[in-house]
Amino acid sequence: MKNKSHGASFFSIAEQSRKFSKYLLASAIATLSTMAIAGSAVAERREVDIRLQVNQDEGFTVMTRKAEILARSAAQLTFDREVLVSDVSVKVTAQNQDQAAIILQLSVSRREWSSRPDPKVWATYFPMTKTLMGLN
Image (cartoon, rainbow, N blue to C red):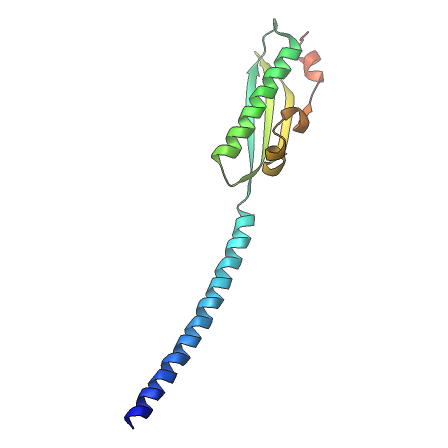
């Protein structure tokens, strides 16, 4: 009898362990699935607005180069500081007292930026800003 009770308790423990293992496996799968869904849901888009004061002596070409440098820096800093950001949009606006006009808009994903961190590739330029701001 003594041997049968030990054998019975061994099988009972084995059965409980098997059920617990199934529970753990199901829980792990559910957790990983939730993390995968949440991971894609937490990807963010960040928008950065920059104002650049107009210097009439510099001209539009210099102002455009400054806007590219600012946009590049803003995109890189955003991706470096915020790991959940998947896309960034940087808008650089020329400002002269009460007037303002967009010089460029850079929109890029993290993957695109890491493959080619060049604002000239990803930016949209607004050449009418030269006329609107009265620049040379």
